[in-house]
Length: 179
Image (cartoon, rainbow, N blue to C red; front, top):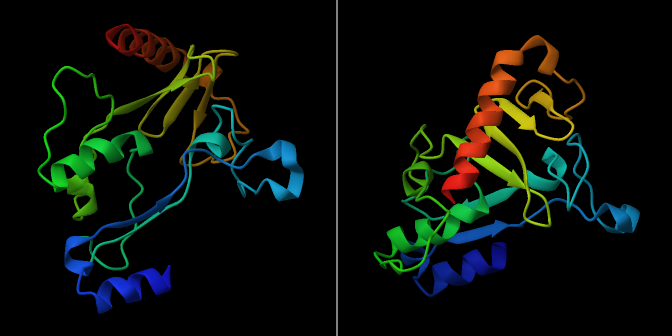
């Protein structure tokens, strides 16, 4: 990574380049220690738990992404296409539905994500859950997790917040139907 950044500086391309390092899913746990680790996050690739969904992302763009900043706002790799299109002033095809959102303001240091919720699907494309803010509802088995205070998703809060479970379930179904 350092050599790539050095080469971009040497070629004087760093002001026109965004370096983005990320992955599309968590570790492949079936390969044991060779598949990686999600650290404190639960599970890995192929699951809707945080270990399968929440991944590291490092970006570098001198003068455009404030150095040394961290972003903990809700966004996903699905948002990279519309973001890169916005940054490069490239129009997206109007005849294609794009599920991602432009998060370029987050990259520039904004504290507000354009994404209010995130919908989870199984590997077969079935609706599996929804996250809004700190709350994540997994439809089957109907568990509710506070992923800010419980990143390991160990404590089911559904019994304590039945109205929130119903609200998130209805929102997930509504958002899924709109896709």
